[in-house]
Length: 222
Image (cartoon, rainbow, N blue to C red; front, side):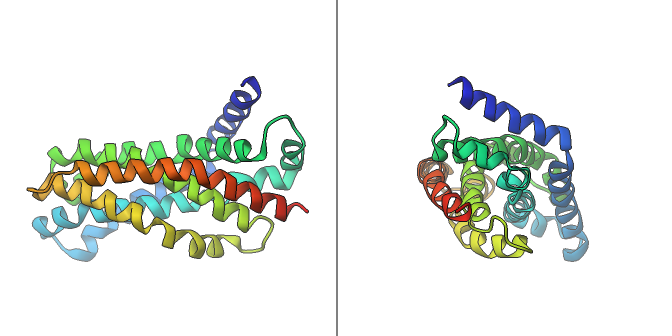
């Protein structure tokens, strides 16, 4: 237990200390949302309708920018070899690194969404459910990204390949995430069924993704 907490704390501290990946993700998120009204024009009703979708798409793309760093830095400096031979099972190592990515990237992006929603005329009543949906769905984003990061570990220009592998797997998260916020805006459908589906997707990813990522890591480090 102490070793697991130490690894999680280490990864979170390194991510905040370096700051580059987090800053890039937050900056990209802001830029994508900020330029959307410039492209679509000043139609406030249109912006309000597309706000949940645009915020979710921007979040998924921003999260992908830092996904390759889940294992890359430890692979480059040899720490990943030490972790594999250490006391922690490799699936647990993958899970902890995915959790650190969610804490340092998914949570800040989700909490920033209501502020950026103002640029898209997002109704204030939809902001709490939007944040709740993002907090429920972004664990799936980080844990699925870990699979792609492990599959592309050590490859040149892995960012594009990682996006091609992972983006199709994000489609269910996108669908249910947008449905949750849209139900709060337009009604009369209840937002809770899609929110529960998001929770189910995240739970399934937390259980299954570390196993797949660990298998890919073993193959990459042979």
